[in-house]
Image (cartoon, rainbow, N blue to C red; front, top):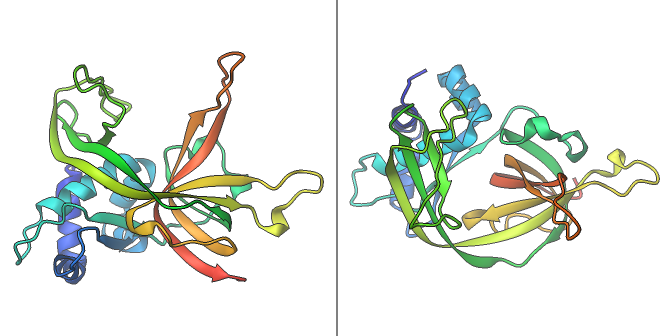
Length: 252
């Protein structure tokens, strides 16, 4: 695999998705997505594809950086564009998820039982290159103290606090929405409440799924500590950060 994931992404996008890139450049919207099929990546470079599954934040950050630096035959920069991955291998049911899946790029399926109203939120993020190990990672700066930033490399074998070189800086507003998935009827256990999972959607994924729909959601499983007033709890709740949605429709 090319040691520079940004360069590898640029090579793949140029060779296999050039027509789609031209279509995005000609779009009249500043929020456009480039959909990349995972089997295409596997055929191109199996090791690169596996790295995407194992370290999605690093690899998707590199994809964004590549999307921005590609020279297009138009005076357009895809600064709000996103690379969205579809057709991931395998599908997980909600009841199959566990701590081993946290931080991985996976596909889950379920029924939408709730869809919140879309809302707008301010975001500030950057893609950094770690000058020590070469890792490319996306860093949410919304909750970072800009006067005394405490940012660490996302590479678990590095974890240094710099030096970094920013590749992309983005400040603005995005539309977001939360939906709730529930396990399928055949997965219900008698006497046990059906298992559910909250899914976060952003930008052009908002409004793609409605209560009653069967969906396959591709993204990254994350967690946050469960709030407890009595004491610090070691329990946590899972949630899912979506990068693409495949809506199979209602009544499937």
